[in-house]
Image (cartoon, rainbow, N blue to C red):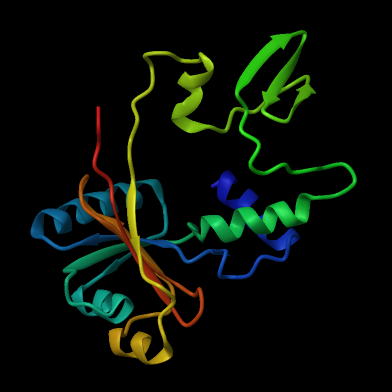
Length: 207
């Protein structure tokens, strides 16, 4: 929750709109009886912890998503939908100043430490006392955590911005996000990037 609050503060401070960040909550969507069972069990745990939640039936799910595919849903507030590219670009614009410079298309080819850290690129180098390696699985490429990381490939299919007529035909709310109630399945969302856009994500695992 602290990370979401931090992102929310960044969106506010840098003037990012709902096309980049919106606190819409999250729904665990169930399309099978097994998924519904997962939702009921999860709701029981949330109740025991005193966490607010709401169970949604098939009609409520259809009203929100525009499809009769889902049998039930478990809604929890507080989470957010982020459009990653819009969020990062907006934050970058807000950070640039006489103290902060951003260099794009400058791949770090080597990272060495001799007292301070030196990051070398094809066009120059940067020296700093501390470095944040925000490179996910490419930590291995810099010699860190070798044989300790498992790479997960995530794929997404995203529509172009839908016209008002297309959005009306699909139905559902303008903003919603679902994750599968079970451990496997697809993610989906509608996002206010224009009248509406939608994406579906699959997460195959490669070892």
